Image (tube, rainbow, N blue to C red):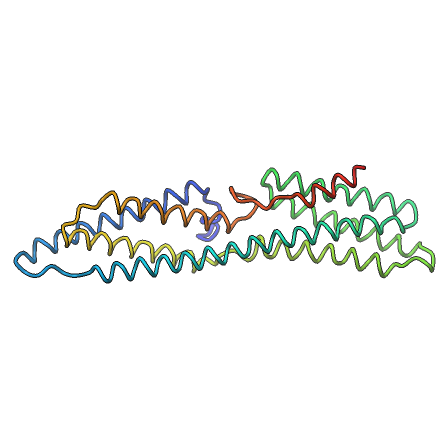
Length: 259
């Protein structure tokens, strides 16, 4: 598994602990270097790195805020796409009544399975399986729709039905693209980790040089940043962590199909 895959597969508590571990290690290394520098420079004016610490913390906070905002926007896009996809599935389900028998019954049964599988697999956090089975069902529905439209009468509005089915497939592909393939790039993750480590190291160095004993404040800062990184990681893998797109539109369509 590559580095990107390792980051994506790391559980959220693992992301939290790794972030805290790296940050505390950087803090401790900075403290050791700062204390050593302080001993070497006895009698000399203490280094003033407070401004640098403030700048580094501000930069890290800014990057985390931008990253969080980007991932939250992606999460909101997924919720909107789910609503649109549920509407397209329902429209396709209703228009399937215009197909001749037995294609009508078969297509509606496949659409029902399509919704059931999506709800069940996503609820169980089996996103990859949901995508694979959904694509297989799409192929079956498409084949039945082609056969049904060829057998229909001249009055059958086949273009209308096929347009609805095409829209359903397109919305599914858009959800997969946004939800699975548009996560944070590995380079961005590495830059975020490196910036966090550098900031904590500079913060520790400042504490060592100045002789500060604010260990509790530094610990709280580390925990706060680790929580935010964990939240970003959660938003980066929708459907698999604590923050999940609710499937109420699909559940509503499932209820209508059952009726």
